[in-house]
Image (cartoon, rainbow, N blue to C red; front, side, top):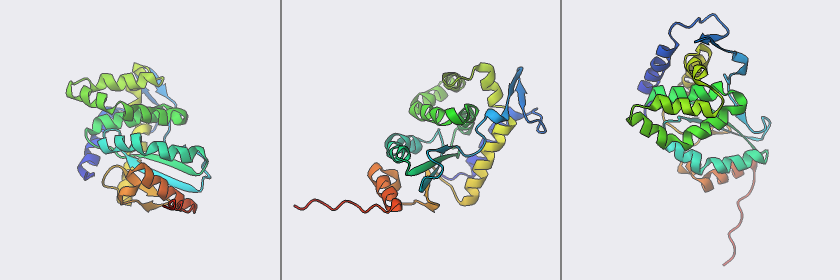
Length: 225
């Protein structure tokens, strides 16, 4: 999906929520709640050993159906290599429509901090169908608040989180860097810096083969008939 219009809409969506914030402040206050930037996940959050020999970067959106399929089918394979210390994985925000919902979801993940970041993304992907249903019924805000609550953010903290200038800047900077890199659809996968354009990166067996090749592991010979 072409991202240019989505990018502009996404920035506008969170910018509206961020109006009135003090850009010079290191913290953001909303309804008496102050968010400490040191507790937020404002940069890349690495899953696994930072020194792992293989790096996988995924640009994706929590409102992208293909991304949810990737999360369900391919991420378990990646996680096996992460747990073995062979892969480090990095998720990078790249909102797709509805941009305001995607941006709010990303904000919740960043406000959960590095320890809770991937747990929130897991939750959002696993409950994507429910969130889409909430969008149709006009209750997306309630669904997102419920997501935030499951990860330790009360209603006031949720409101502060989705209006936080530091979070807004982190998400938009990630989107801008992705666009500068040529990202225009989701999910977009890079393995050791190389864009994966084929179907292999979208299937469990294909991803395993790509990782094995990067690790220098020879494919197992087919059993003799």
